Amino acid sequence: MRPFSPLSRKPLLAIAFVAIFYILYNVASHPRVTKTMQPTAYYNNYDEQVCLPQRQLKMNPPRTKAKAAFVILVRNKEQEDIAETIVNLEDKFNKNFRYPYVFLNNEPFTEEFKHAMQRASPGADMQFGLVPVQHWGYPSFVNQSYAKDCRDQMEADQVFYGGMESYHHMCRYQSGFFFRHPLLDKYDYYWRVEPGVKFFCDITYDPFLYMQKYGKKYGFVVTLLELRDTIPTLWETVLQYARSRHINVDKPGQLFPYFRDESTGDYNLCHFWSNFEIASLDLWRSPQYRDFFNYLDSTGKFFYERWGDAPVHSIAAGLFLDTNEIHYFEDIGYQHDLYRHCPSKESGLGCRCECPEGTTKDSIDHDQNWDTCLPRWRQWVKKSEADRKKALSWKYSW
Ligand SMILES: Nc1nc2c(ncn2[C@@H]2O[C@H](COP(=O)(O)OP(=O)(O)OP(=O)(O)O)[C@@H](O)[C@H]2O)c(=O)[nH]1
Ligand SMILES: *[C@@H]1O[C@H](CO)[C@@H](O)[C@H](O)[C@H]1NC(C)=O
Ligand SMILES: [Mg+2]
Figure 1 (cartoon, rainbow, N blue to C red):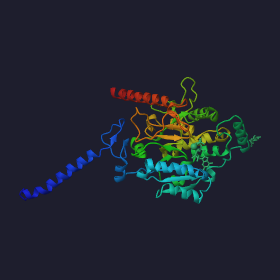
Figure 2 (figure 1 turned 180 degrees about the vertical axis):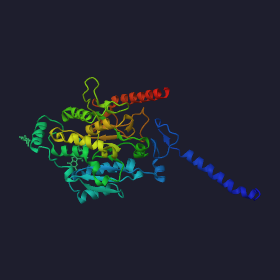
Figure 3 (figure 1 turned 45 degrees about the vertical axis):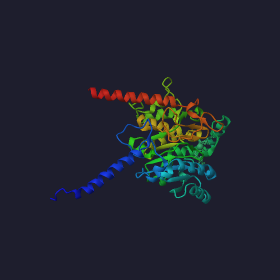
């Protein structure tokens, strides 16, 4: 063995210096961590609700990615609105995360449309898919002249979009088919985006990885009341289905009762607004969900009534998921049409939000709107967490 000479200490000193600089650097560049950050032992720059400086993200882009993509069902004529949304989404999130886009349409996308998308996010990975005809037309068991009578009646009754034939196909497609498109085969999660929606806050962590890490299957930003006259018989159909498949809708932890009016047993009309969704594709690919969709579809009421994909997704999540598999993306500032959600000041959530406040001529704070289900959601989550703790302590006292 070599004797320990002063000379051989030099590398040691150098290592010590490097270590000290490394620690100092990390302390100095430590990001602001929001108050409600999940209590885990560590954080990194993509896994938690952190608010990193853009500069830091740019210098140190995320190294891990989920198998995920944006999914956008859109018409050629909505080109401008969707381009605007993509510019906004890239700016707030995706320029750092580089997730691919999958565009879907029941008609072929025009070259002009594709070029406009590429211009909106130069260099982004974009795929343009055609919806297969058997996923958009009428199934054989639907009586098309009766469907037309129903639409005329809905039109007369002013059922929202009830008279619009394409809207029925869209809702059915989003309920039962989008996740079967081959362009989505290689992904585990999707983020649904629609033309014209806006994002107000920087998103400097990866919501897909968040879902993956915490075992979340469905994420939303707005929960609200559905229009009753679009789904007159949806709830009874769901109950019939649950009975026929012997599904216990009241298992401990289950989401289903969130959607049930306890006094009447009827649908309370709460659902998650599906124009924003970050969710697991496997949730919809599962045999149980397909069976559920086929059951609903066989009634023809995507056409005879105007069942929306939002209540269908939500109630299915109720049947097949536990409450703690749902994630409320409270930190994401978002607007669709006039309705906006922004993280409140008290929550401490949201990263550099540029949110309008109160009610303006082109946006409404939906969390304060009459038809929000947010208070019910918060109560529901509190209750199910309490129940879970109680169940756990029971288990341990045995
Ligand atoms: N390709 C295609 N996409 C459609 C069609 N109808 C609707 N979509 C898309 O489906 C999504 C929902 O349709 P919207 O018309 O925005 O319906 P909505 O969001 O319920 O209602 P508003 O936005 O309030 O009009 C959007 O992404 C549309 O671009 C259609 O006939 N073909
Ligand atoms: C289809 O619906 C129409 C009512 O619009 C009805 O007259 C017709 O008998 C129905 N056809 C079948 C095969 O049930
Ligand atoms: Mg829309």
